[in-house]
Amino acid sequence: MSFDPRQEDYQRLALRFASQLDEQNPSDAAHAFSDFGRRYALERDKLPQTNSDRAFHLVVKATSDIDYELPFANSENAAKLVTHASKLLDEAISIDHNCYDAIRMKESRRVAGFEPYFQFLLAGAEDVRKGCEELRSKVGTSLSVERAALARDIAMRPYLRWMGSLAEESLICGRNRFTIKVGEKLLEADPADSADVRFTMALAYAKLEDEAGLDAFIARERAINPLRSFDDAWTQLARIALAYKRRDFPAAREQILQLVTTYNGFAAALIHQVEIPDGVFSRLDATPYSEDELLLALSEGTVLLQEGYGESGRGSLGTWLANTASELYPEAAREARELNTVFPNGPLGGDAQ
Image 1 (cartoon, rainbow, N blue to C red):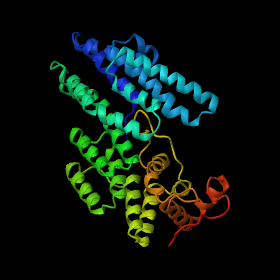
Image 2 (cartoon, rainbow, N blue to C red; image 1 turned 45 degrees about the vertical axis):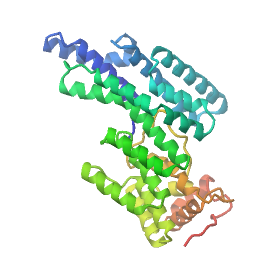
Image 3 (cartoon, rainbow, N blue to C red; image 1 turned 120 degrees about the vertical axis):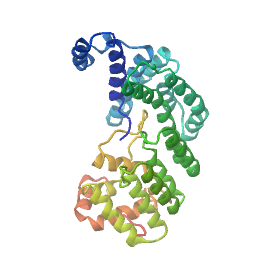
Image 4 (spheres, rainbow, N blue to C red; image 1 turned 90 degrees about the vertical axis):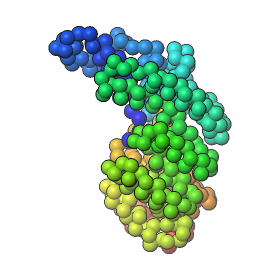
């Protein structure tokens, strides 16, 4: 799931390198390319690349600082990481004025509050689309079918990430119908849903209490891509919320059991409900059906879990989910108490049924 910036950096340079070999005889070209991986790992800066490629590599470094190191850093190291990442993004923009990923990431760190960032993303979306489409149109016809397809895909990825961020910020700002509208536009541009915007849309349908809309959306997407599964944590969490909101607690409990079965018994995550900083480059990369993915879905699902925020520090659904998961999985509740992350003074209150 999600975009892997390091893989994308590798793909960009691999395409560039392969194009340099086209005039060589096939045997020499194959031999040269077989050494590409080693050269990428040991002497990346010496490989053929454009300013756009160099700028993107700086984005990759900034992503490592912000998305994968900053959440675990102490206050002193955190300040250093933020400063370093900011310099990397500034340099990327100076090298490539149309480095949309760097522009978006820089703004996300600069503005205070969700609404200003949402407005920034909304205002820039059309220009980013046009810029990426222009790059896509310049992909050479001399490339092989496979290379041309990859090059066109890479050209559009900054737009997909921009729109994915717009959908996420729209959801956080309570613009649920607009979130679905953005998601539909993104799926139109990328039916394969590289940005996994369907996860964000599932939460928006739950916020709207539109179960029929969610059902119709899933049915349509399954027809387009029958290999796509809709047993991800975001969709199942939306199902739990919808059942809870219509006061169908047996159905909600059954959905909890299904969610924990799908996610290999990681019931403690439903009790912990840890909030994870949103990825700035894109949604954080997590292995499908892993505990990390479940934690990520629950964190993004805070918009549902903290509705009716109360003295317990949780909303009514978050409280009920933690209580019910504790009843269904006592061992997970004991783990939560031992970690002292939940229940420091005994079980949570709430409208458990």
